[in-house]
Image (cartoon, rainbow, N blue to C red; front, side, top):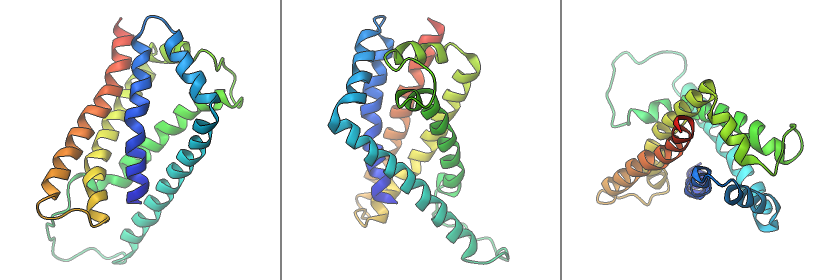
Length: 200
């Protein structure tokens, strides 16, 4: 679960870098980047690995949550004990579910067009993205999804290192600070792009 999460975390800055091309008034750089990503054999192979990582991450997340729910049966604790568990960790399954719904819609709007399952022009993802970001309903859902992703990442980043045993008393605060910075700036980068497009 932790290794898959860290792998997916490494992918997000790459995706953000490509999305920044949407702010260019010329659609060609983004469309060329999208075309390259869709046709280069190494990236096409990486897509399979990435999709597999997403599915396994979701699967393990569900399994772990079910184990947590069933580990103490249906009875609630008689005495509430406030542990060191972070606020975000208690809602990982729900923030993960919202991110999954966003990904499903994102796949329909882009990936399914690329593979021919949904009608659309795979050579003009720039136009498709701009059209979607001009829709208020989609824009609100997009912004909400990345806010939820920020909450998800706030716990996921440092806890992954903790689970792998790489976090010590001295390193845990460092991982938490890095995790919070990542959880703020990466989703913020994604969220700003459609806002600029919508209001311009």
